[in-house]
Image (cartoon, rainbow, N blue to C red):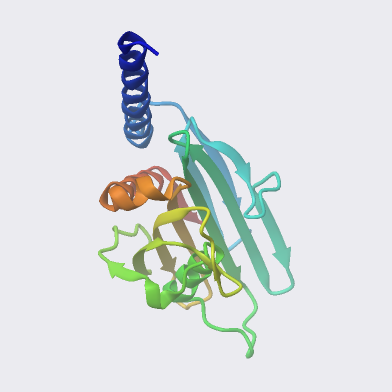
Length: 228
């Protein structure tokens, strides 16, 4: 191979890397207020919660958490549960996973645990392979429901499932959970930036932490939560 083709090969590799980085940056910042978006509705019924989940238009979905067509709105004897998920590819090896769920209990059961923000956050973290002891509490955004309690956590690294690390990807995740007064209903909102190229993640973890934060803040800001 002559030097011309060698140089072209190096240039193409550099262009590919720059393009991938630019795609991630543009995608994560594609949250302008006037940009088109996808929306899904979670609703736990009369006296419960109504949430309009809003994500950037390049996101794929909606799904439930098992990646079946969503959103899922389930009623049960003592209340209702809703969930939705979107996947948004931001590079050839990275994807943002948006997840939102809501729980309302209308019948108080003695054996039921109270609906707290910590319990709601724990559920979403567990689904992603993280435990509360790995999560760090950070400042929470404002909540528009009077008297509600809120917590926000960040976590990063390999998810752990059935005692084994999932070494196929590394994640950076932010989750905010809100419980309404009375501890009988609440919701959780999360964004997880998953990178399959472990070397890329390890080379600049701060970039992924910031990316997850931007995605979470965009989801939180643009989604609308109301009481029915």
